[in-house]
Every structure is written in structure tokens, then in C-alpha cells.
Amino acid sequence: MCDLEKLRLTFRPESIVTLFVGESPPHNGTFFYKGNSVLYFSVKESFGGTANFLAEFKAKCFFLDDLVLYPVNKLNKKEREENQWKGVASLAQRMAVYGPAAVVVLMCAIEEMVVDAMSKAGLSHVPHFVTPFPGRYHRGRFREKMAEIIPKLPTC
Image 1 (cartoon, rainbow, N blue to C red):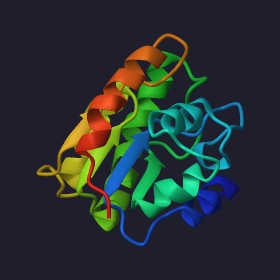
Image 2: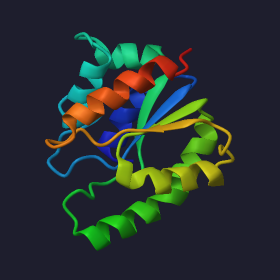
Image 3: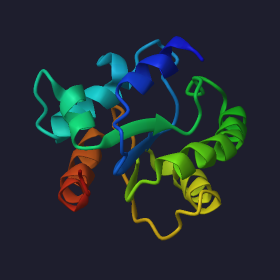
Image 4: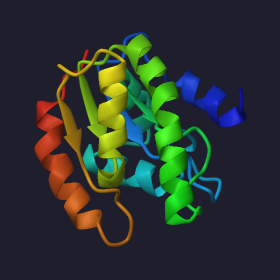
């Protein structure tokens, strides 16, 4: 198991009530659970997070996993999509173990793959929500969507 996955596991709540799904860890070495990625800062801002945001996220029984467990964001479009689809089976296995009551897809382009993983995990009945990735062009839309989604999310 790589260091990023070991770090991710330290923030896994005993029961995952809401599962957030990103595309993959970024190529540049940042990571949500290192507290230094674009996604981390955007999600933290959406929740009005404090310095203890990751602990608060975990305390709400929220967990962030990725469709693909290695960076794909610098691959060309075809290779990126191929790797996203390859990640479905593994994500489905993890989702079946997690058994979330809701799923938040943190990138519109991976919604189809995440929904497929949910189906394979027997979670088709679970509500899912989708936001654009909060990259430079979609930060405003991300904030708007998260403001709509957050009040609907189950917590522990």
C-alpha cells in the first residue's frame, strides 16, 4: 500500500455515511488528506472549515476516496478515460465495504464511472450528487453546487 493510501486510511471513520469520490490523487504530489490540494481547500471552504477540518470531516462520518488510486490528471484524454474505467471495479469493491448512505461525485466527467461502481457495489438505491471539479474555471460552480448539496448530506 502506498503512503497516500496509508494516510487516507488514518482519516477513515469507523462508519462512512457520506462518501466523496474524486478522480485520483493529483500528479503534482498534493493530496486531499495532506491538506494541500485544490480539492482540499475548496471542500474545506465549502464547509466553512477550521484548522481541524480533516478531523471534523471524519467526525461527520465523511470520507473521500478516489476512482483511481494513482494520478491520471496529466494523461491524454483517451488514456485518462481508460484508466478511469479501469478504476471502477476497485472502487466498487471499496464502496461495497463502505456502504455509504450518500455519495458525492467531485467531478462531472467521472459521474458515469462512479454510478457504475455504485451499481456493481449494490448501491444503486443510494442518492448521489455531482459537482464540477473546483479547478480554475469551475470554482464558482463548485461552491454553488456544494451549497446545495451539503444540507442534504447524511452525517453520523
